[in-house]
Image (tube, rainbow, N blue to C red):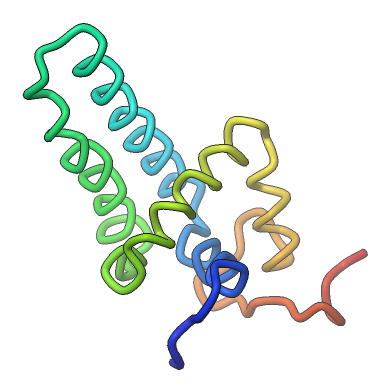
Amino acid sequence: MPRIESFAAFWPYYVGEHRSPINRGLHYFGTLSALGLLAYGVLVGPLWLVPLMPVAGYGCAWIGHFIVERNRPASFSYPLWSFFGDCKMLGYGLTGRMRGEVRRLYGSAHPDPDAPLLTAASRPA
């Protein structure tokens, strides 16, 4: 697979690696836990909680990938874009738009693991 060169091109790939609502839920929990550790550690203390952010965030996410989706986390190849994808997916999840985004890109809110990315011409209106 050729290297992805932009976040716009990365996003459909990222969504495809997070087809399972269980995996997305684990990501939401992990991202919110990491942000909570950051806020609590900085605002209330102790500061030693802050370094636990990656454990909370990646731990939950990697369980979702290795056990639920059975795929390789995007953070291994695209760490920065994966972080941006986590944030965007969390925002979409909290506002109820993530299912629609999966449907827009893959034709179903729960697409099969081998469901192809829809091209602009084949996307439902």
